[in-house]
Length: 377
Image 1 (tube, rainbow, N blue to C red):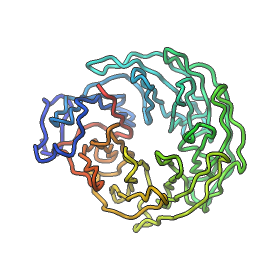
Image 2: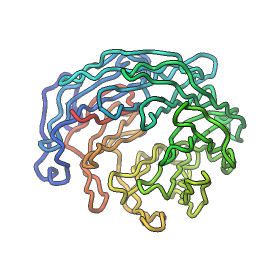
Image 3: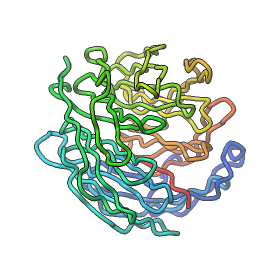
Image 4: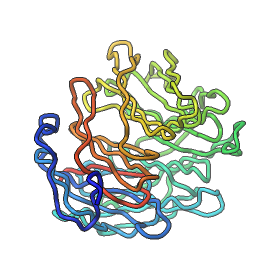
């Protein structure tokens, strides 16, 4: 067995003590991982990660789900929501699922399963009340809002937004919603549409879940850019968007009162064909991270908290090939990267003083990983 690999079924191990000062004091996490493999390894997996000691438990199957490619967690940390990303061709439907988290082993008990009503559900988010689940459907080119019961049951679809448009590249024959997120006070729902080269901005009713067009209803992005993911700064004043096809990062000043973004900066990648992936701001709001897939690199930017602008920092290898995504632990002390093409999830400690990441001694072996989430155990 190679030193960098951790095989499911192997015993627990511990990282080197020189890494421990960068980890946070959270005692233990359940680390859930979603696989996009169509055969062996299909499903939703879990292991236990203890950041103080660096211990990682053997990987086990938490629930049998086909292509669980995104996650959302209830505010009480008891319910995990995910998707079954079927229907990216726009001809079939995907699914939305909710599970009760069983502690201490992390196994999942299904609460509900419903059609996503759009195909290819690639992104979900919960509003702060936990009463609505919002899903972006890549295959259907739409954003849908579903009611959620107090027990985590996903109910009827409350509203929908159908996207329009196309782009000049072969992947942009029609609308493909890739990401959904709510504005800081939840007045607005934003949706990045990779196929239409549009960043939709809609009014959102927190009580009913209704979506209505904003003013403007969308930002028209550069042709062939492929908007993919976005994130708000914790102070609510700035918005950051990364495009998949060009890997360009756009920085906006955000006006929550009117729902209007004003572009203030553009970060062009050093490698134009590197393919942009995810974008996150580390807890604390001092650093922004993006990943590029072709070169398998994680890029760190320092954030000017007053101006919102970015300064290039270091770039780091993701420890594998084709990083599909990445995720921070809630306290910001740890980071994991599902490297899809190398069939492993790499773990890193995070230096919250300068944003640098240091690889943990081993990675977790899993077929075609695409999604991860830390859940306090």
